[in-house]
Image 1 (cartoon, helix red, strand yellow):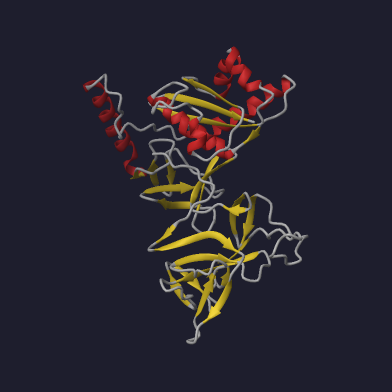
Image 2: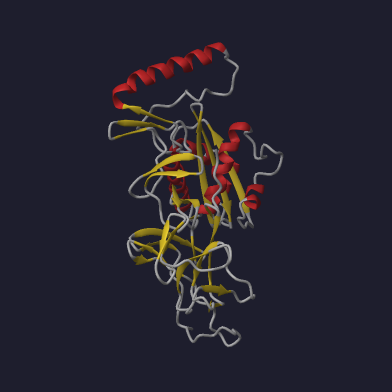
Length: 372
């Protein structure tokens, strides 16, 4: 399983749609029966969706829910959320807000509101109403996975960082108090949660009292499967790795990035910037290496086509791949001892990079992608 890392996504809320882009232009309209609708600048009405609306253009948007006829819900519970008497989404009585970019206030802007000194919140982490959110390109990340500083996070449809147990699609995951995805089998409150691979999806729950019997049964099943078909390349779903203390592959990937900058510093090159979008591409490429260890992808396209697939801009680009090395130090030594790989690592034209590490059938697969 592989989840793409998207810059912004639109999430389904039951039968409704969550519209994540805050609206600046438009106006509220009250009907004769006292209900409200919101008319956008193009003359269309918000219909059957949630929408962040900055009605007074103060840079702060509230979230509202409209029915299939465009009527605003007020003082209601809808889609599992609560809206107050003004129709704004509230949590424990607190109106939820989202800071949005202020439109340009230059002389050529018809929407000049004399806010020329106003600016949007900086990209990156910020705390809002007790929940952590992450902003990219002046918009909150919503309803998607995000890899940040080498760790994986999930943000719900309102942009809040998820913690604890959480369902994403049909899969079940656990996120630490810091929001980072746990990707190894772990013990919590007397229950082992079995995670067979780096994607982090929980496959089974086993009582601590039954754990050793469970392990033994699955290990015996794994041996039996391997003995019955030595040429079978598809490992059994029961062939788990029970190394609760095994290092997370995302930690390994980020360690490679740090070693790269140490090598560049020694060579008098500028440090590279970690890029989460590029890292999402390297995750895809690292998993593809299991099927085809090549700079070509399994579908025959160039490795750099992953940038196009994921919407990542590129100019000067480079890729390093490796397999079999078991630590960041080992793979970096291999690359630095190879002329072509070393040239990529020290290339003065590159400014950004991402690193992917994928573990499969007892072997690590490594990818570096560089861009200017």
